[in-house]
Length: 313
Image (tube, rainbow, N blue to C red; front, side):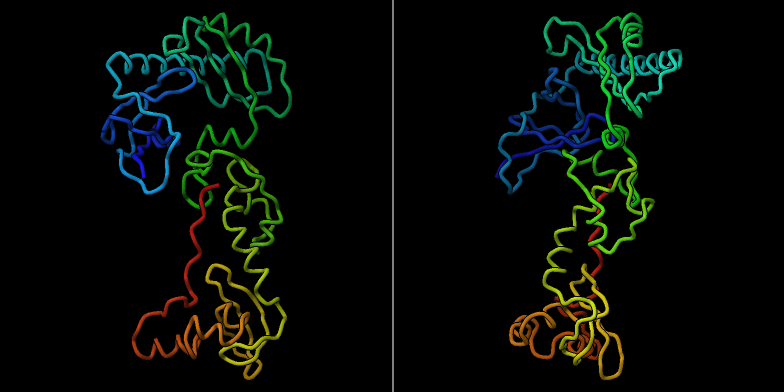
């Protein structure tokens, strides 16, 4: 066990986890966070508390921000806004096919030593851009060393943030640290329509959340009977006509009367003895009908549970 807290550099931005050390900030307090460019001011959004997991290796909070730290942070925010505006104007003047995505300002007084102030400008472009003249003009206007870095669509969405198709904040802008590869095969395995408008995220690429539930679908398809296969179920023999992975059930058409029913996967995959050991004698649909007649709720493990909520991708 250990103590952990969470901070954010921007309102509703990505959360960063810290070891509070000997400090006990409250939600909304401004604290100093160690970074590669020196301590930076961030807002505490999750007060220190004990967690059951091992949380060793986290950066340690450097304490509450002083008045000078808050003044420097506000000045740096103004410089970032000025640098963003100047960069956009000069891009239009040079007629460069590039889009300014984000601007960061590294103050030499923030712990980087006596070196010059640095302005980092992130941009997106359809191809490589010759921005040497732009860098010279920016350096002369901002009186700082200027670095331009081209980023891809996923990094652009992460920096800008937004709302995904699920209605939640983008996963990449909140908790995702690395972009793992996502393929169309994952969408097919989850029976999703292979339509770019349905499975693409805000970045125009495949949604990262397609990878979250993919192992669950792989395990289900590896053990469940195939569609069209004849199986025995608590309701009698029938033919598999569909799968419901979130509820772990198999949809089948009964051979006796053509009725459709959903049975737990365990009732048609494993031995009857193993199924009854898990669900009890007469499980599946019959057990659910008996529960309804008696006025009881759904038995544990019954089908019909909702699909786990996906993240924003």
